[in-house]
Image (cartoon, rainbow, N blue to C red):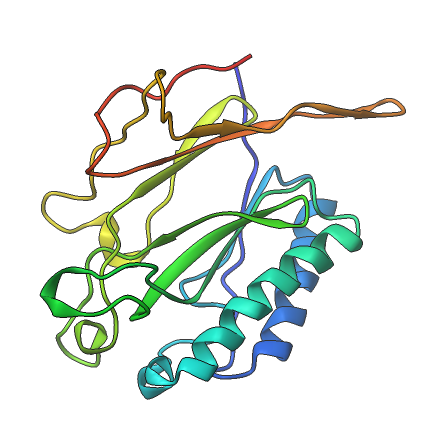
Length: 217
């Protein structure tokens, strides 16, 4: 039976300190890998700190967050940690116009999977709280995809915070085997006596036909 060792790193990041937060992520990813983790996950917006509040409205800070994410992926790979998929929360912007009239480029509370030196996939939070101390609906536009990764033969769906318990949940998982299939795979790698399994991800969305996640060799 496939087994997955997941490392959940609940670290205390600092709002606005991209460099310091990056170092913490590197440190705890290394620690997790040394403990044999197959998949490493960090909290919501760990790279920027949370809540960012009005920093989300500064385009320069959004771009700094995106650049820091790419740099983090490269550093993980350079330091020998590229084979471990790492889930990181950060501040992103939408690539296209969303509902409610927000233009393309509006900020998003986002997550990414980093693997082999690249940002392998990104996704955004769906349910934006607007009660108590939270004011996310003011700052962010919602996402509309449900990414899934397959690590060590186990499918893992990715969600951010409140997306886990809201009525109706997220969009249904979808993948099609035909043209335009949203699934991608990376091959197994062998170095000496060590074999690193490949992993598969499927970024599904409401505009794609719903179908079960497929099995790859």
